[in-house]
Length: 41
Image 1 (cartoon, rainbow, N blue to C red):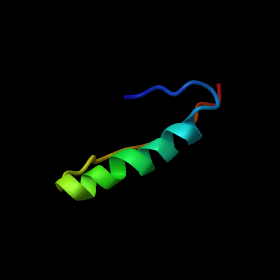
Image 2: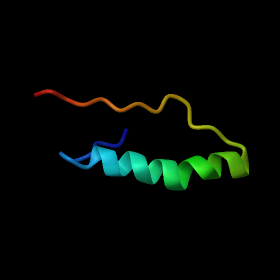
Image 3: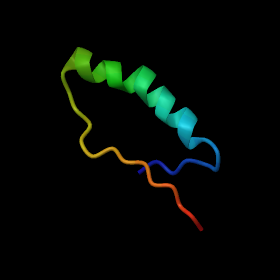
């Protein structure tokens, strides 16, 4: 699990899509079950 600080979840998701996602296709592996849950307090 990766806990994102307040206001950083969007940046984390963008970095994931730009960096990790292309690697999945290139090296033929999958990360199953990625989720984002915004806590409401």
